[in-house]
Length: 112
Length: 404
Image 1: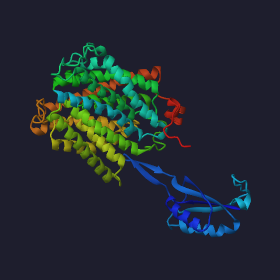
Image 2: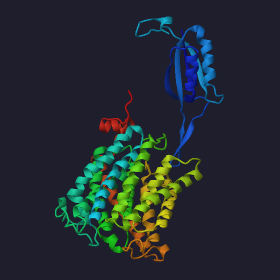
Image 3: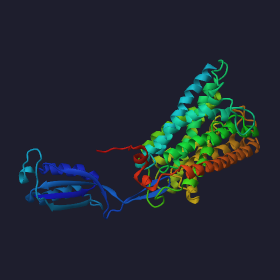
Image 4: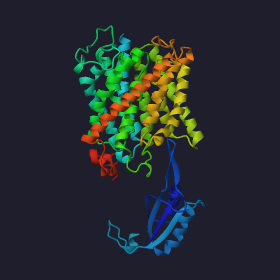
């Protein structure tokens, strides 16, 4: 089992969610996060004073999938999240050692 | 007279509503960890100052009215002999209550400058003592026929008594307590401007009572003051936003709110003394001038957190002085010397400048002594850790926003 983690632009979330549903994904976990990468922050102005806001709001989504599905789902996310402009975000894949469904106690592949 | 009484009854409630409005106007601009502390300082001003005014403040302000003097007497201590009237005059108890709402909001204005760092007990003593030693005398000078009024200076609803007075006091307290921790190094943007815009709306609504109520009658002067209180802030909003757009790239919601409040401040001394287009000009100019006055706090190295100097002090001075240019005897028969622009010469203008300087100096000096004394004894500023954690949690054991 693998964990796919993607940090994307918040306004692409709906597209990505629908695309993943269409690809048969059973569930995703979403959090609002902030950070910076190559995309610079932005400035806000209050009564003439400029504030540099370094951290840009992003959405992080995580899903646990079978190893066989990883490449396909990464492509689904990439296509749905991409705008071609700086700040589209990143996707990374890591190993999930164990997975347990709390309600039933099912483990591993059965719990996906 | 029934109509007059009814209007002042309503106006009293309108003016009281301004203090919660001010709480939210300021509260939206502070960091979220100090939101409740800001609201508390303003709401508490009602709690404390209503009692102080009843016991001693009103008497010191309005006792021996018309004596041309510096302070009232003790005739009305505890509202003694402040009666219900006989139906042919405004009930004295109503006038005292109307004036109470002014005494409440004036020290509350200071909290914008000192945001995020006042100890609660120190603040409570500060505004209580200030109300007696600064507010009551200045109210006597200008509202109760004291020396400012006798000299010939005019203040329809509180350019001198409320705005210059509170603005100068803000500077004095800032000199004592110093800047917020991290000021100039870390960003401290407003935490939720929707509150600020809501507060602005409440202030504007209440300001109709403040200005039009100050006519103390349901008459044409009240109607003109009401008109001016709508149109001057509107013009000030335009003025502020235009400079903002020219100097930066954006027109902002905080700019719209700040401009409107600057206009409310500037028209306060003029409301029942100037004509309709004069109100537009005064408002528009106030929006521009108060925006440009934002630089003062940097130049003076004062951490005036929410710009009480630019909006209230400068707005109050500008409005008070502008009255010397635009005062119109055809609007209000009390005007003896019309403004310079109406061919009345410079008499009133000079009186307005003298009164503005006098109120500024008196408030600055006396407030500084009060604040210094409190700071040296019980302390006026929270410790570093409290400031870091946030006043809400440490001083009040509450937080404004609870997630989870």
